Figure 1: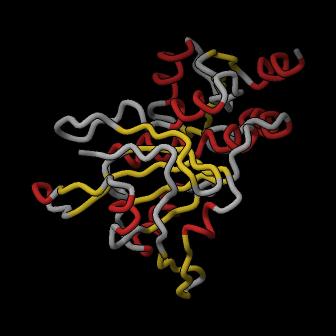
Figure 2: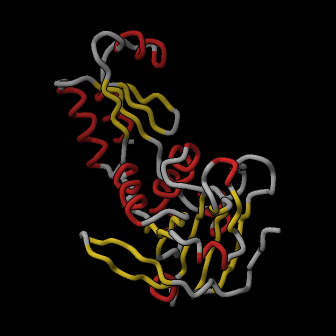
Figure 3: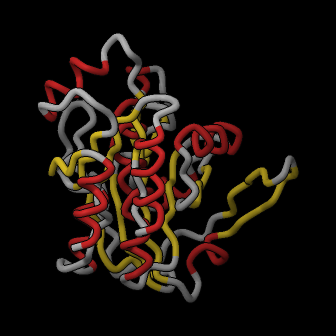
Length: 243
């Protein structure tokens, strides 16, 4: 049975990490003492759900967590520090602290170590998240014990909603652009000036017209979307931001 450890202290563990090509030991005291910490733990670095959703959303919502009293966000996995460091680079996870629980000591102490030998994984962490205050578990969201890899409650949005249901979440912004387009550069500069973080999707000449026509009924770049709403061209964006 998986253990809900709300009201209990996190295990006393030393993690062996690599920083600037040197070994550095980090303890749970270093990570948790005197801090409010959001933790999410997952089966493995570079695995599908972990890479496509679990880690990216915590990284994306990090500013909202920090604005609502969370000091740091830890990603824990039963992987070695080399793997975790490379995964952080691959994911641009600059807002997260990657915690390599290579021997599974922390995960076992949390009662979350499970057998995934059928997948060739050996012992790994069950997927969960928790809020820890000064080393004591305040809240845990543990995925249901179902076959496979359920992902229903340990997500970043659920944790942020627990901390503050009214928390302001970062806007979702995307710019469909083309290389060498001055209007695209103008749109991206406007977004940066107004504090928006955006995804830039550059389209080549072969597909640009079809893609933009299908999603916006416009054939020219840029086309800007904010939170699912079509804003449009750089000129339209300027008018939107002026409001």
